[in-house]
Length: 200
Image (tube, rainbow, N blue to C red; front, side, top):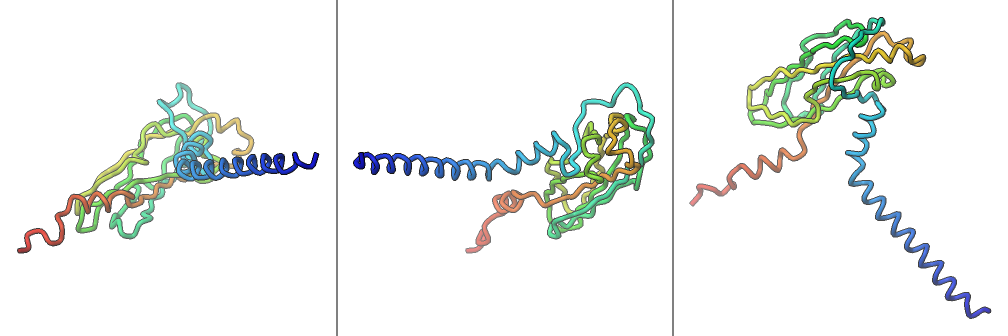
């Protein structure tokens, strides 16, 4: 009877070892996938003020009037960009499509690439703020002194009127933040000649 205990203990230890190894592999895989999964989760649920995507505005308008305000930020100091909305706010009826513009200018002496992220506040309004077209998550390259007007087409879903948790929402702020594209430094270094080029 006692002779079976070491074998049983060894089997139990192997099971624990496999379980720990599986958890470790899962955590590594999750770490690699966490950013896109989090972005997808936010886009689907509106968590953290993430807006939704729509193909078109609804056929019928709602009845609530909402003020949409616009905000712009540049997170990376080394990006060298000026970024601002071209309108401070728009008053809209739920379901009504609008086109707003942001303007960006490269004040640096080098071509640079930025990527914009977005959110809305209050965060609970995220699932009801629908964007039809947007410049977010796309790399934008600007030459020195170059500027660009970037549009965003949106509407506030009339379904917001049926949500008792959003009865107090009269104003929604749409915020964009530009970051320096992560792969830009590598791209620029590959396109530039070596420091010793042309030196005999």
